[in-house]
Image (cartoon, rainbow, N blue to C red):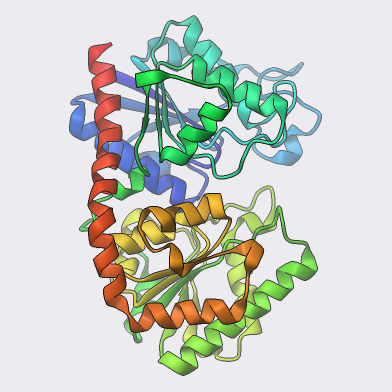
Length: 408
């Protein structure tokens, strides 16, 4: 039996549908290529239900259970009087594995400190894998926000130069790495987001609330991620009021319901990390509340695919909303950060339906929505041009990984 350890630095296993979709695709791709494989996930909150859904074994990583618990402390297990249980499990898993995979989005220079933060977490695990002479595969990296500190750049350089193989979600990330002085030659490949490899026929809806919302009439999916790290209270309320206005306008003009779909329902550290509070507040600000449905629980990948397959339009500032929409030829209109969300609209050839949050204008956004609803064929044509290559590249990601474990 081959053993793979996947370090889910950031949001894997934390009720984040986008990260879980990529992880689901990764596990499915591995099992198609490598027979008889055991996958262990290092995550903040090991969860038996998650393990059953993804057929993995999750163990506690170096994170504390909450940000509050981590204040003025080093990683869990490295403080006086800490129990070493997680360290023992991590050491055992890595020492016995055939391949160590660094996954998620660790290359973000926030909360940097001595044995604190995402990048030091990634670097610490890479050191341990190197000590046990394990091949290190850095999987499907995306730089959505440029690194702004010398320490962050140096940690990133350390992690990547000590890896054996790297895949990224596109050329933009490769260029950023080159500008940082990181050159891995043939051992770095620009591919695409693993979620493009999802099986669009895997859409067995289990959520009864979702089925009820779908039953009424035709609908638009809306997912608004609250940019809590950018927006203050007054700015957040301004955006919420404008999103509520957009909902009322769609309902009145096009006779469509709105279904708010949360991609992140994790709220241990910050209220607005969870999409649901923002969705609920937007509904309360709207007039046509009876036509707006706010899903208030976590959804499975099958639930989400079943919902997107029948939507008239998707409106979102989350990258994976567009990917899910593209799998079913559903029009999508987006807003957000240019490098993060905008990059996905560009790679699918529909960047004219995206607006940079720095240049937000509700009138222009409504024009884009009208254009999308009234010209569905535009999306079908462009998706047919760009989606097949992105799906092929997503599957290549699993091919490189599986070859690496069998060859090593």
